[in-house]
Amino acid sequence: MKIKSIKEQYKIKDICLKERLDIIVPAVMKQSQSDAWIVASKEYHEDLVFDALTPASYLTARRITMLVFIKQNDEVKRFSLSMPDTDLNQYYPQYWKFGEEEQMAALNRLFDEYQPQKIAINISKDFTYADGLSYGLYTELKESLKPEYVERFMVDEMIPIKIMEIRTPTEFSLYPELMKTAFEVIEEAFSLKAIVPGQTTCEDLEFYMMDKVTQAGLQYWFSPTIDIQREGHDGVIYQGVIEKGDLLHCDFGIKYLNMCTDTQRLAYVAKDEDTDVPMWMQEGFKVNNRFQDIVGECMENGKSGNDVLMDALAKAKEENIDACLYSHPCNIYGHGPGPTIGLWNNQNRIPLKGDICMSYDTVYALELNIKYQYNGLTYTLFSEETVSFTRDGMTFLYPNRDKIYFIK
View 1 (cartoon, one colour):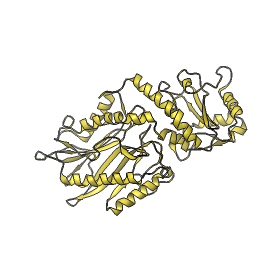
View 2 (cartoon, helix red, strand yellow):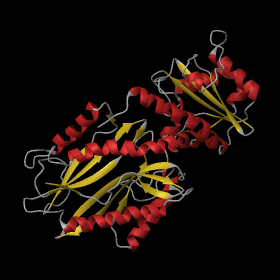
View 3 (cartoon, rainbow, N blue to C red):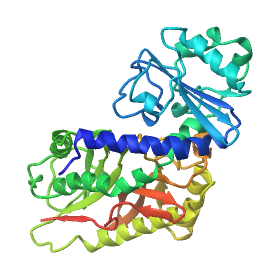
View 4 (cartoon, rainbow, N blue to C red):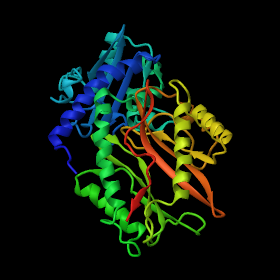
């Protein structure tokens, strides 16, 4: 597994930052009714959008880091009202006269100069990714700004959500490397190098995957899980020893290059006489793949996550597929900002989070399962593929999504 040096990773993150500031931020803000947007963070209590808006070397807020975006005609100007920083100031002109005035005096001066009529702040009752302004900073803004500016505060949750959700051109170009890195771990775990049938447990394999990630200098954004389905056994086995004849299922995701993967794959541990994955498993997985295609057919720019969910389930029912859909955006965060498309425990419309509409140039974890009958028992065939959604439709970002690994 070849991982880029930290220097290379920093360079890439800064290229993506410039693209986000030059392309995505103006496009998103032009869709907003706001005239200005404040992103303010305390050290070690950063807004969730902070990492999407700051350079690689700027790891935490410094005392109070405050970035302000101002719409002026067709342009979106950006300013730093933070302590001067060489790297930060490459992207945000320094507006606060540090050492000559108070920080909030600089903010009042900025608003005096540009007179924004609607000022967006990141507070939200319903959306985590739009609720990054701490109560303490919110209070300080209200107490320190001129009353006329406080009265102009507004909430537009879609500003931080879409700025984090939409991918830059360079980010898209990096997904093959990102996915290959994640699958090197999955494919080694689903082999006799990692599994000794009759000895290795689900927990052993989970720790094996975690070790591979951390030893490579990466991070997993959730602990990987391994479970078993066994012919003749009713239901999923979440703990225990892996035996020959088992159908294994992993759920695994890493964070690398400031992006996340989220993937589930299946593997069959061969019996001595087996030469391939049992035909019933292959046939069942074809049904799963068909449901993946159905979901892709239902995705449309400007369509809500709830409408994608309902349309996909309806089409699956027409084709007699017993399906469950629970997909989510996967971007700077694994369970990232953007439209929710069902929950594993709720196949109805999801208020608010499911009402967010899809946008082009986004990435999803296409997460779902189907139920399949064999020999009088019901098996659950899981899958999760990291996919992109662009003007070309839904695209799988790694090959072999129709493959059940054969371990022998």
